[in-house]
Amino acid sequence: MRSIWNRNISFGLVSIPVKMYSATEDHSISFRQIHTRDGGRVRYRKVCELEDEPVDASEIGRAYEDADGALIPITDEDLAALPLPTTHTLEIEAFISASEIDPLQMGDAYYLGTGGAAAAKPYTLLREALKRSEKVAIAKYAHRGRERLGMLRVVGDTLALHRLLWPDEVRESTGVAPKEKVTVKPAELDLADTLMATLGEVDLDDLHDEYHEALESLVAAKMSGAAPTAEPGERPTGAQVVDLMAALQESVRSARRTRGEEAGEETGEEGAEREEATVTHLRGRKKAPAKKAPAKKAPAARKKAAGTRKSGTKTAEEKPAEKAAGTTGKKTGTKQAAPKKTTAAKTTAKKTTAAKTPAKKTTAAKTPAKKTAAKKQTGKRGTRTAS
Image 1 (cartoon, helix red, strand yellow):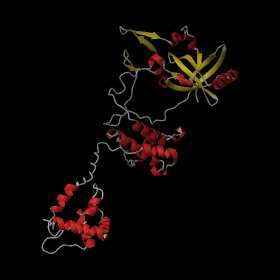
Image 2 (cartoon, rainbow, N blue to C red):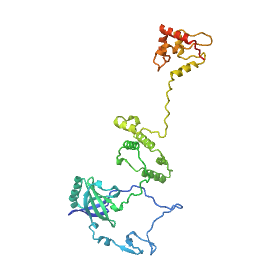
Image 3 (cartoon, rainbow, N blue to C red):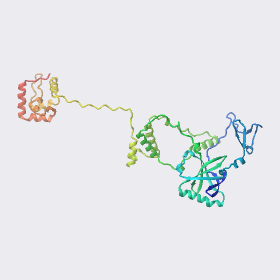
Image 4 (cartoon, rainbow, N blue to C red):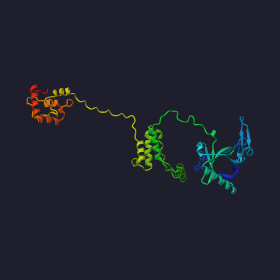
């Protein structure tokens, strides 16, 4: 790698000559601008307004434009003469925990290598001190015409420098959050936790730039004269989902299918928790009205119903009683009612009719005393006919 900056790290009275290297690189494919009508290249040219001629980069300097539009030249010598130690040195200010740094402040990253054999010992000393303390160093340095804030940390056996934004360069987030007041239900949080657990963790080394690969394939196809064979990707449908619970549930199922899992494979506490968390809640569904049990007729109502039965129609309760008692009545167009209103039936609990249970009727029919009582009762009241 080619170094882009040479400075000294100032660690108290210890000076460490270092060289700066870019720690990152952009692997995106760069495009050129063309004139779509004829394919001609469109270029940007730096032109001097006074001469109306292109200017070489070596002839370009910097200047400050004041309120009146006047340009005040600022040379490299002017910048080097500033009364600041950071113009030549990366000055360590303090050592803090990395958790105290807001990730919003993180900028470009650089590797710092030694600037000679004499720098190996103090370089290693600073590296090992940072490792043992589990802290990072906060430093100030001048780079590209500005004094910057930086963070030194250990990456493997190398010191790395992360450019930090000054705290006042980070904007407030006021007005960005949703203004609508919403309430997140515990069941929705449970499903979100289940989705997070299902997606699990990932090794960042396994991730790659699929868009870059697709662009490379497209460029290769164009260069060979072949038509692109790539199919357009599916558009995300997340914005069309209205039911948050349904979206979370489907996300959990999709994540499990991606990982080759089935919903019924989970066992134990984890499976129980996830199964409970993924219960589908049907909203707006009305419960069916409960069927009411038929009200029991009062004894008086049952007597009235028995007296209003049509001729020739017998209930299931009357038939076994008639067979057991042997009293079917004369076939004169009217049939005697079953002896369910007999004295034996009255001696049973008043709340339940003896005629309701066929077994009790049969027992009553077999008892001679109850037969006699039934005959006497019939004789006194006369023959009751069913209308």
